[in-house]
Image (cartoon, rainbow over all chains, first blue to last red):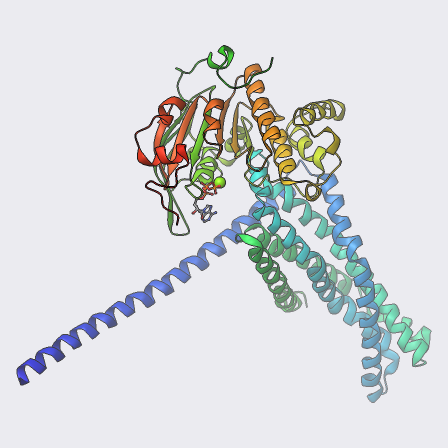
Length: 279
Length: 268
Ligand SMILES: Nc1ncnc2c1ncn2[C@@H]1O[C@H](COP(=O)(O)OP(=O)(O)OP(=O)(O)O)[C@@H](O)[C@H]1O
Ligand SMILES: [Mg+2]
């Protein structure tokens, strides 16, 4: 009987050993699968980016589509940009005033507001607002074209969908987002003026005088570089997500959400990287 | 000329003996881990109307997308006049596709364009025609599909049957040499359906072209095509002249042609 028991335990041990090995294979398979999937995804993003840039740079250009997209990115985002900018400037001014007053240098308020806006908040907040308003719509629109076989339909007509859909949007974003950023900066500065000068009683000459003295061309250029980089990033991520939407309405909603989340996060990460490079 | 079906003399002359325009050789395709096409060998005769029939989910639409290079086979070849589509560069593939017109099962109209814009789209993008000539051509074809009054409507204002007719007009407006139709007549009332089939037939009379048409109109479709292909479970199980397919001894084909609920396929 003892021998029989041992035999059975042997059998169980062997089976467990086999199971362990089997599990190990499964884990390796899953990790490998994930890694392959990630590499493939990364490759696809890269190829998509290269195709988009190539088609945006090499003629023929689709002038009318570019104008339409400038309207879509620029004009349609204008209201929300002006609104955000005004309140951002106002709150900056309010906070700045109390902080600066502690050091008795509230006279520098104009410079502080302008520098924060031009170097940092203008490009970043514009990019985030445009992502929320236009980026999400862009991902959804292209996603719907994908699931409705409209992109396939372009392909069957011998029309490159990247050239047709993505390239004009890249050009339009590169034109309109920096302009929106400039508008954001100006409106924000006047929002700050409203609070600092009209509400808190700072001298207007002082507000603008210090601003003029401390904001340099390099600060403006810095902001422009940032907003150019963000424009590019937004269109790339949002159109990529739309372009490779999975099937069904659920696929489109997932693509839209992840387009907004990923572009927003990348804008913030990119902002840090660019600030450290451009500083 | 009023062509009731393809039995008239003019529709059967031509060059059926010439080499097939499209050949699929040993085509396999796996989608989402499922074998959707399983070693497909198929010839599409030149200047003939070929109908593909089969159950829902048999792989007909996937098969059609392989013929125009929208989907790439995992294994096998898709030969257009002897040239493998897989070996073409993207540019060459786009050039090749000028020879095709395609109607998608969903219609695939552009939401942002009205009916006129949709039909004019390939002409505007792919030809150097002036706006005047484009307008003329689009109106002619819209009249043929009975939609001349709808030119200003947007796709979301159209009924399913209208979408299909606009898509049909768009697929034919460039006078392509090979037309791929994914269910051109599904969801249409009998009068419109027959007019569409009649239009296809008349166009075929006037300018011979090659057409591949997926259809569920069995057995009517046998009168409107020269060649029938039966697809089942990702395989071609029968191919030949309509009368041969109609009299096939294959029990599945027999059941499909008769629309019988008893046979190899049980649903309930
Ligand atoms: N893009 C895709 N990804 C994954 N699976 C797909 C895809 N397209 C089709 N399939 C699957 O392939 C099979 C065949 O689909 P297909 O659309 O070719 O059917 P069909 O014969 O055209 O049917 P129907 O007559 O209903 O249109 C189905 O099981 C479908 O789920
Ligand atoms: Mg189908």
